[in-house]
Length: 345
Image 1 (tube, rainbow, N blue to C red):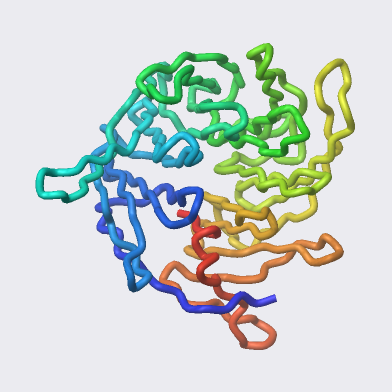
Image 2 (tube, one colour):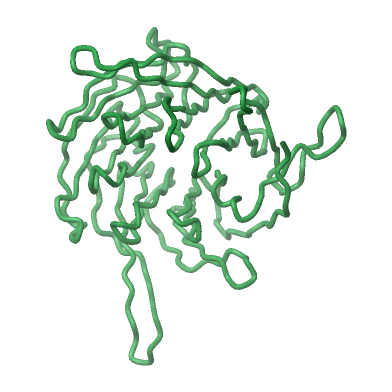
């Protein structure tokens, strides 16, 4: 199945490598972060071109991740950096005497608990309230809570989880029928019998996290992982980026000794990038996965009615198409306006 439309390039004017790209809930705003220590926020103009509306120096070192909170909490961003901090930013809007509207993102809180680089930051599903999870190279996952969503200057640390391996990425499972699940990916180069992905169950009432499972089939260092949005599926899908792309199906087997157990099955594993895969992103319905790697390509993955996953589109970094080796026709192309939902860094 080919996806067809046109591709537009955007000059970001970042002065160094861009590590992350994040769309807001509606897909009409875009945030980027870079090793140049800056964050930029973009909006579309009347010509459907992305225009930079805000730019600011956010950290004192490379910024690894940027993520939007749910709009229920306002226009809020979180970033994390090699400088060992994570920061929450809130957009403030003001009106000048002449009637001009000005907006800027203001630092509301800086998290300084980590002793090493903070490698990922993720807001929890909105039904859990204003929760923020971070992971760092010191092997600790920290979960924070803002007790008053109207005052984001105050945050409490709820939980610290000692993973005992260098952590690279985290992802919350959004399935409403399950207890909240957090997947943690580890990029520790050493061997681990239990694998490099660990699953924790978050108990909102008891304010604790319990290790419930790991994925022993993932033995390579993990660069990114991402739960697919769950809209009515009886199973959950977890995409994992290592030197390959893997899609793991997790089916709940009910509770054993008060924790959820999963039946694991790898439903897709792809070596097409042939180099390290760095970022993953699902579309809003959790039916198409995008991946980017050191081969300079964005690759799209989709399953058919039999549940077989395959590549449905490939884009080079310059926006040109990769042609099929069999037919000579383009393999596929990101479609607009849904292209925003497939963007990766």
